[in-house]
Image 1 (cartoon, rainbow, N blue to C red):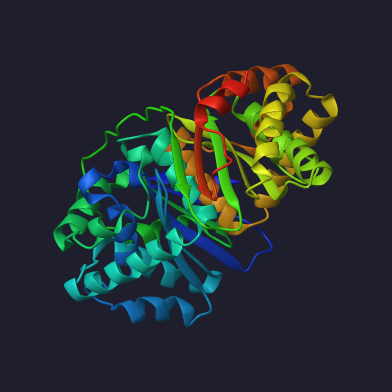
Image 2: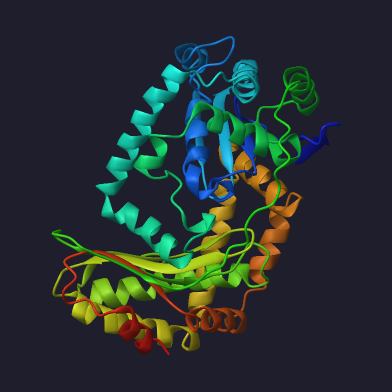
Amino acid sequence: MHKITTLENGLRIVTQNMPGLETVSMGIWNFVGGRDETKDINGVAHLLEHMAFKGTSTKNALQIAETIENVGGDINAYTSKEITAYYVKLLADDLHYGIDILTDILQNSTFAEDELNRERGVIIQEIGMYLDTPDDMIFDYWQEKAYPDQPMGRSILGKTDIIKNISRDEVKDFMMNHYNPKKMIISAAGKIDHDQFVESIKKSCTNLPTGLSTERQKADYKSGEYREDKKLEQIHLLLGFEGIDYHHDDYYSLLVYSSLLGGGMSSRLFQEIREKRGLVYGISSFSSSYTDTGVFGIYCGTGENQIQELIPVLCDQLNESPNSITEKEINRGKAQLKASLMMGRESAFRRCESAARQLLVFDRIIDPVETIKNIDKVSKETVQKIANEIIKGPITISSIGPLSKLENIDKIQNRIN
C-alpha cells in the first residue's frame, strides 16, 4: 500500500513498504526532459543529468560514487523526452546515504568548468557510440521525421556541435528554470518507514530549484522518411505511425494489438516473416505513449535482397491483422500485460518508478486492481477499432543500410489500405 505526503512547497513524497525485503529503492523523478529544450541547447537535459554527479559544494564526483558503492549500493540516472530521474538502490539500513546524495546533487551541484569540459567529451563519445549502432539510431531518425522542427523530434543526446558549446551557465539555468518541487516526485519502495522518510526529506530539501517554466510545445506528428544508404550487412527498417497518449481510452487495447502483432515468438509478424519465410532474425512492434501523443511502429533488420519480399508481406499483415484478430490472440495479449504488471510489482525499483510516473502523468496512483480491470475491458472490437485508426494514418519510415531495392515511402504508403 502506498502512502503520499505533500510538503508545503508542493514536493510529493510517496512510499510503498514491501514486507520481506531488506533493500530499498529511492529516487527523485522530475517532470523535465528533452522536449523542454530549445533547439540551440538540444541535449542540455541529458548533459545536466550527467553533471549532477560531478560534484557538489561538499563532495567531489568520486566521493558521490563512493558514498553509495562503499555500502554495496547502486546509483544511476536517466533522461527521457518528458522525465529526468536520479535514483539509488541500497540496503534499507543505508538509505540515509541515498537521501544525502540525491538531495545534495539536486541542490548543491557546482557544475565546475573542468568537469563540464570532461563530461562534454564523454557525451560526445556516447553520441559516437550511438551513431555506430544503427539499430539504436534508427529510432532517433524516425522521431526526427515524425516530429520535425520541434522538441519531440530531437535526440535526447543532442548533436556534437551543440554539446561542444553548451556553457556552464546554460546547464545551470536549465536546471534553475525547469526543476521545481511541484514537478518533482520523491519515491521509495522496499523496506521503508513513510514517516521517517518524510522527515528525512524535509530536513534535506531546503534549497530545491524553483523554476517557473511549465509550458511545453504541443507535439505535432507529421510524416516523413529518413534514408541512409550505407554499406552494412543488413537493412535496418523502422515503419511507424502516430500512436496515442497516456490518457486515451484505448491505451490498453493498442498495447494488446502491439503484443499480438509483434510482441513475441507467437506474434503474427514473427511467425509469418521469420518462421514461415526466414526473412529476418528478429521483428517486433511497439507502442509508446507520451502526455499528448504517442508512436506505434515495427522494427526489423533484413537483407538487401529480402527487403523486396518483406515490405509487401509486412504491409499485408498490417492491412489484414485488425480485422482477423481472434479471441485467443486477445486473451494472450491481455495475459502478457497482466503478467508484466504483476512481475513488475515484485521489484522495489519498478514499484517506486511506477508510482512516481503515475503521479507526474495522472496526478494519482493507479491501483493494480484498476489496471487489471481496464485490461479486462479490452475486447476484439476495441482492438480492431484502435488498430484500424492507427494504420489509416500517414506513415513515417527510417532506414539504414544497402537501400537500392527498398521502395520509397509513397509506394509503401499506397500498399497500406
